[in-house]
Image (tube, rainbow, N blue to C red):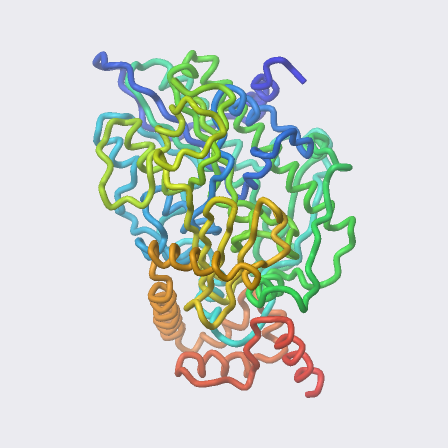
Length: 556
């Protein structure tokens, strides 16, 4: 490996022609006191454990390792919601999702909501955004929002394409995710042509799609993104022999919400060990491509002499399960889905620093505000990370500088109950819905990092303590009730807007293959749900009810 790992991908900037687009210029005006520039790169679906595991041999990530070696790594960073839009809303607002009612990929922040970058801009910094932002309401597919609204309806339908791995035929192809490379080119051009020629400080944001899986076009336009696509160029960065096959619980032992998620994600069928290993290996290769883009940004900062005066952040909105717990995608509180990367390099940050405190995305808001010298609003959910970054200790938990817990929640599709996770010390506590109708889960991450042994029954005193702590942070019973109400109201409004076209539209969403087998029964189940009536379709929250449901189908 090169002694200067950031140069590994420096040549890539010449591979794609840079289109002419409008960007915000930095006027070379008044001299100002030396203030730190900020560059944030936010990926999509990057498993944070790849940046925290000591001696990671799975995939070569030279540029992220460069950030670790010359900066700090947060060993326990979490998303506040394991799905795209609500997690990004938390990052941009500094508020937990329930405080902004960011319930799903369709319902997040209003278009005019003031983010930390808006406030920083008012302070005199020049700001620039490129790439994926995805924190405002109104985006994502119709299927995605309808599935989220109807998750309380007692039926079980596959909503995603079967996960699979796919390899580009071009052995030398580097730029697989073309959109991300295009935006990286724009960002690096802006650094070289704008930022390098001005003494005025700046905040630059680059949002990536990688390493999120790609749409499975051969499965129909209504299926989600279930293809893990890469090229031999990136796959060679993966140590295939070190790619493990995750352990799966038998269906009967799965938590009911986990079984629902596995089924709706099309993961309850048979998979060969080769299929599973390929999916995981190709995902790691997609992470390597993400690392390559990060290298291009670092090279631009280094070549322009800006690296020494710039705080560089790398993080992600959530992780990726990659077939752990018989699931892919996110929408889960398991580590693969909820544990995110958070690397920071910049002035006054000790090289090679490891920070063990538990942190989350809402902490980035007050961190950015403090870096810019802007007062942080009192109602913000997060805490600035600068005290931890500047502390002299290494790998110690310092609760007086940052509370050692994180909250995450999920209210979207592919899970049929609102889910709340509290990570505190070595414990992870997961509560569902109203706290009574669905059993909680408790994991000791120190002894059970794979999260296969729910010890809630063995440690009732820990459950009581974690439950009390969770309820002191969020009244999740009330929040779940609010989400139920929102789902019904939103679905009713949408149904009325479709008029006579409703039956045709709802039968052709991502679940159309399953829906076509009992269309009338599913429509009636929705109608009964809207009227608060019981359904003759069993409540399909787990394996047992799934067997009953399919037994009825076979007996028709």
